[in-house]
Amino acid sequence: MLFDDVPFPACLGAGQDRGVPVEREGSLLASCCADREKGSEAVSPVAIVWPCPLAVDAYAAAGREVGFPRPPCPSCAGPLVFWSGYRRYVRAAGRCRKIFVPRLRCARCGVSHALLPAFTLAWRLDVAETIGSVLAEVAGGGCGVRPAAERAGVPYETARGWVRRFRARGRELGVAFAAVAVELGGAAVTPPAGAGRFALAAVGAAFTAAAGLPGWGRVGAWRFASAVTGGRLIAVNTVSPWYVVGRRRFMPPIPP
Ligand SMILES: [Zn+2]
Figure 1 (cartoon, rainbow, N blue to C red):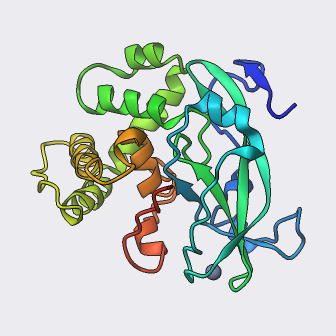
Figure 2: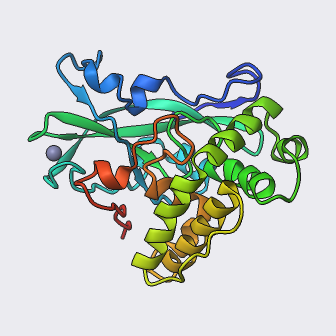
């Protein structure tokens, strides 16, 4: 069987929202340690998030047969080769699915990178659209956390954590996405009051600009946000991938 459909809450307890152990998707901690599966293999602190347009079920069903892109190494721009992978859970529409995440290895750097589909965020169980819907409702001022969490079918504490993190990072995210919007030829963002609203406005402006480019419109705003941030939209660590990756802003390649 290529994948398992596990209904929530069989795969985790209430309040948990980690889709995968931290070391699998690359953390600053993990980058200091050898990958246990490969002995001497170093694990990148930066996951590569590709703008996967597939529905979660279609991606899960395809297993290793998904038409994965093979972007260049984010550190040295050299060629990457497929190098094992792992399975992790994602939750969409209240159900957990197990998906395959390949790893790509750079021989030059001796580092492997997880290649995450953009419907995931690093270390988060829920898909980008679920998290984004809660952020848009609550940080946008439309309602409180509790009704948004109920509508999204996620535990209250989980949703509250997303909103807190998004607001805490709101100014940083707002500045970064506003810059992406301008770089893509979009409108300049006038920051509204409140860090969360600023971040929302900037993500929206950047996606509006990106949607005019081939391939991006069908991906949707929250997958776009995950792709641009390397899955770290609401990560604890505040290292911005557009600084980590080659010391310049990074736009993931668009699949053919
Ligand atoms: Zn490299």
